[in-house]
Image 1 (cartoon, one colour):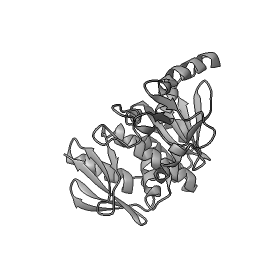
Image 2 (cartoon, one colour; image 1 turned 135 degrees about the vertical axis):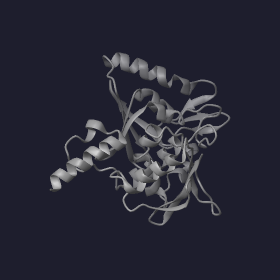
Image 3 (cartoon, one colour; image 1 turned 180 degrees about the horizontal axis):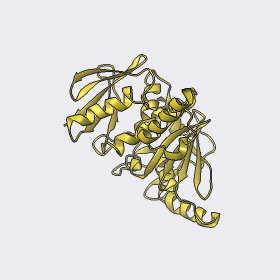
Image 4 (tube, one colour; image 1 turned 90 degrees about the vertical axis):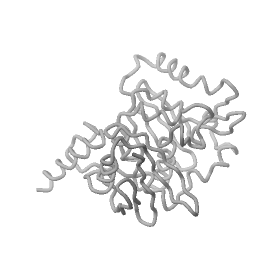
Amino acid sequence: MPHTTDKRISKEVGHLLYLGRLHATGDRPTLDPTDRGQLAFQALLFECLMSNREYPHHLEQPRKSAMASISGYLNAICHQPGHLEIHTNTAYRVASRLLPFQHEDHGVCGIPGLRLIDFTCRRVRLIHLPTGARLDLVDSQRWHGMDIARMVFRQETDWHKSDGRSPLWPCSVLTDEEAAHHACWAYTTSTPLRSALLMRSMPLWYRFDLVPAWVTGHPTRPDRLIWDAHSETDHDRVVELLVRSEARIPGARYREKTSCSGTLELGSSSAQLISNV
């Protein structure tokens, strides 16, 4: 029966992607947006989070792993009507590592064009000016009153004003320095794939215990998603999740090259999946 099938799928997807009670209605969960601006922002966010010390994102601040360490604070990533919602242990800290600032030696760090709408005792609401995309960070705990919330938020973001940094996120418009990074959020053939990978990232970090990195390609080399695997079965589990499970990327295909490498395809875009055993 359709309702029984939807309930089973919802339960399985919830288990795979750590959605828990976020999709407890029994309906088939919607995992991916259709809005081009939201897709473009989520593709950029995916690149920023899928980074590490060996493969830092070019918007990472120098000598530290601010964005690369965010995955350790996350509990769930889910699609909501009109916005992306990320559940986390510390919403204010995650916000501080995503919001942009100007570094006197390094240039723009964080996500260019990301702005604070407001925050409550539990939620931080953000908007990405160039794409119009929305992101809500939802904390696992609620601060007892806005006075405490404002104090904690200030403590988490004060470092944006120290050691040669100046925050860009209080600006109401996109600055020239941020606009220079317009290629980061441009909609390309790989945008839907990168956004879809973001929505299915939680098992890679937690269930499979991987530290993946996205390496953007160039005309002679394709995009790559690289990780150090514990065994050859890790690669099979990633492929199973992305192309065969109930949480699979709709329309995605996988062409195996070796037991630890192959090509993930979606539409006209592709990326190599490489596990180093």
